[in-house]
Amino acid sequence: MDYLEWFPDRLVQLRLQKGVSARDMSLSLGQCESYINKIENRKALPSMTGFFLICEYLSIEPKDFFSPQLIAPTITSQLATALSKLKPHQAEHLLQVAKDLSENN
Image (cartoon, rainbow, N blue to C red; front, side, top):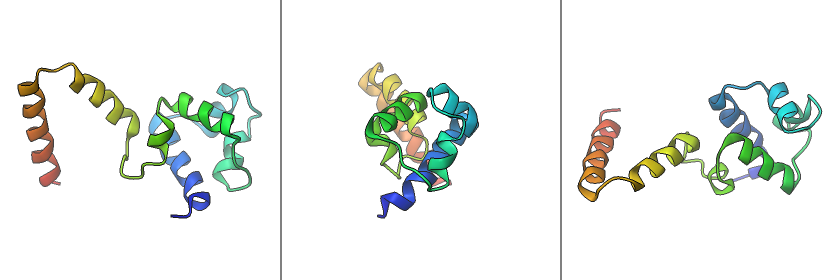
């Protein structure tokens, strides 16, 4: 996978899931208003620190940013946290529901 090409598209996907504009995200990160726009338009890449701040802002783990199979990593993380609090038989029930839902799509 060409991560230099893929990275900006993933950032757009995750930013839109959060429902925030590129300008607002840039300013929330303490950057100039065009910071995220430049990344998404392939004119710049964030520093490592910048990348970690982006992940923190998006409420995701850096590893999840690079997991294309996780379409909605924030929701996946929330589900994992909720599942970890269930009794085994409850988790098995939800697993079956998830399997049923994914088979019907």
